[in-house]
Length: 362
Image (cartoon, rainbow, N blue to C red):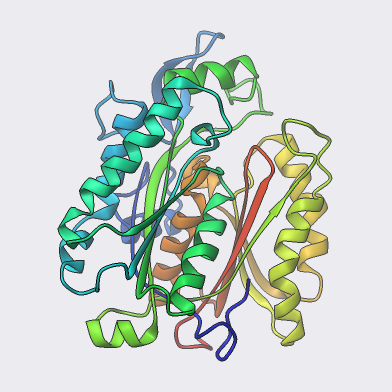
């Protein structure tokens, strides 16, 4: 889905961001430490079958004994910050949309009593945290993993662009800091342990993005941090569970964005992906990138990956990418007119979003 002036309304803009992860307590700290090449990787309390402690990019200030919905609720409240209080009385009833993006284990299609219960707990926690707004928002839960927030941006962005909502909040939360999750991944031999290089380093975190119109930002005194120009969601039939993954789903998903860029004879300055060190993820990227970048990448295009500094952030990946990009746009590091961020879920969902500098050319 692409938003252009006069087509489905004006493009939505990013008016606010917040982030929490193993590297930083907010979006600015996350951006600054990442640009300084700090990495959130540390030894965790979890012990692998090999006897080694699991390396994670976890949030070390959170209580060591907390996991599951309780841990994610702590992250949720932190990234919401003071926004519910600020929104009090500013929006008419029914004019706020909220999307909560969660890991795939919280999907209604997953038959797991604990995770089904926790999904509802997280939904209620969010509604309670939003009570200062003064009325219940329009809330959707999207438990599609890494690529799922692209659907959240698509859903919320369209409500704002078409005037069905004045503002929208997208929250992406995920955490591998969970004994059941670690045990499952260890059984699947998917975790990096120092000897097994074909494994990934799990992370955790959350990020919140506020979308609105330029008019709302002007009237409310909010900054315009970026313009959300496109959001695309696709499916990979041959994913990590079914294989072999030939990158077709990711290529098609990102091409839905880049084809519009090519039609405007424009290019991508900054690619921001979620490729981890797992061989199937690397292969997917290697097969998809030549196709989706053809005609829109240039010699100075920057390629970066979020897991290299923050670990695998799951459903928090794309909202965290937005936090990093808005900080970069405001500070000119890296210097870019736009950024295309993409993510691949463990299951079939693939997602991509295009953010453009709020003032056009930098």
